[in-house]
Amino acid sequence: MVAELIPIALMCFAAQGQTPKPTFEVASIKPATALGPLGMRADRKGGPGTNDPGIYTCGNCPVSWVVSEAYDLQPFEYAGPDWLQNVRFDFAAKIPAGTAKDAFHSMLQNLLADRFKLVVHREKKVMPVYELTLAKSGPKFRESVPKDAPEDDGPPGKLQRDKDGFPILTAGTTMAVVPGHARIRSDNQTMAWLVRMLAGQLQSPVIDATGLESKYDFVVSWSFEENNAPAASGADGAPVAAVLDPYRPALIGALQSQLGLKLEQKKGQAEVLVIDHMEKVPTGN
Picture (cartoon, rainbow, N blue to C red):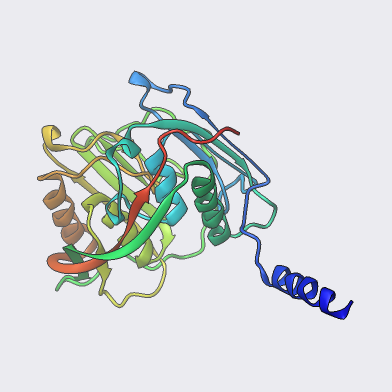
């Protein structure tokens, strides 16, 4: 009798030691509903840190966007099949109350593994990197001071331009590119935030060597030849098309003249996420 109870007890202890995978309360993935001109617009909303932390939706969303968000990566930080950029779905999920951003990322990873059979590994890759330092002039931006929260301008509409042709960024929009002109703007942000924004635009890792540790108000605007521009977009982490010269040197020059920050390209190593396997069609809801 005692001998029969031992395996059962061991199984109970083993079960108690297992940590359940973070999952959404409910999640669905459906064929995409086309949005915008030529059906290329995507509409991503919600999640921890937003005004709607209990819901995550991404309508007409390329799979690459969800992979980027699940692993908190820029497009150049992972390698996978080309179809990730083109195959689109409508993602919707209900998030448990109080979920932190790290747990939310794990939920997205587990959803991709469950529904798309995603398998990945990480490896080091040699690639160009940029080092961000202070120019001789020193920083031309100031530390943030307390201010009233900006008013909610409602859902984003058509981007307006100022008299110089640069996009006017309303509350909640921190990056925009329109033909020939681009702008990054945000208040009360760290250098880590700016570095991530720059990495997305340069499509290369950016290393912060400024030594600045406070929070700052940033605005930088640059113009470029339209035939070498990436596709028009709003940012807040949304992946953009590959950046081509002279867009890149225009941004680098604007950083130095407007913010007193210098970017120098070097050769280095960066960790990338390699997608070993991913089904093109997800399993049913």
